[in-house]
Image (cartoon, rainbow, N blue to C red; front, side, top):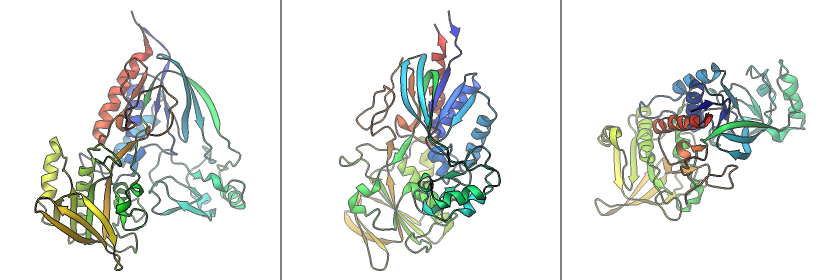
Length: 418
């Protein structure tokens, strides 16, 4: 005999996995609470230019999910929020949520008057610090919720008061403080995603010192129409268009000194980004330095297509030190293992394919869940805490959605007493 309870599901993380799990559970008839630490939903997918398998902009898919959430009364979401405490047992969890102040309330219409009044700037987190934003800003052109955020560092300053006075809707609330509240839920889907490996730790590549060495996630923002250069792929040091680009695979991955594992998607990401360069500049040339190209199943045809392009050169060999010349060019040295020679090539831009690191790699978690040696969450049947997406293992967007749907189904089982 089963008895349906009136309890709810908590989804932690508002990226593509968290969104998918929340929507599927809610549309199955369950009350869902979605908690996201950033000021917007969509996670890292929202910061991509294109994604597999269709190579289309992610905004179309995200917009559909945002509409499904907006129109579903069973979903309540909280941005700039985090889980600080979990107690109880499967089917009966008590959860404490802390929401950080946004200093902009629900009256905001995103008219931009507050931004016009702001004077100070800081590195834009959405664009990985490539450009600057004002002290009050929209997280992105296409963000949900479409509401401004005020940088807390200016609270108590004259600038903050000017911003408040500029708002015609009384949406700027400088008196906001952190708030905590409690929830009772039957199950928790942990979908907090991933972050890029810190490229500055790979000293011989010079990331952070050579401005023309960037990471693959930064490349997505350069190529995006809503990115810092409005989709123009340029050399960061001087803003000139690029003619010759190097993609370095396994930047820190499959390396006992950094990440011992393969993230699986980096090869495809670089192949995709090679098409960004060539579509924008048909005269450009692209070099891809790799250990092994991993493009399995349906992606094999895409690899063959890019590989057959005469403007693309693949070099099997791990790239060594990158040197910056006085001309501004960056020299990549590598051993061409197939031809048995040492190669040296000059490039306008070098893109490091850094691996995926789970958000759970550092620090204590507010939930009792097992992690492997690399910080990925392990499946734990019967605990009521279900991991989903890249927090379990490196996967692409399509696989994340599938895994999140499965996680929602598992979570729903805890809303039924047997």
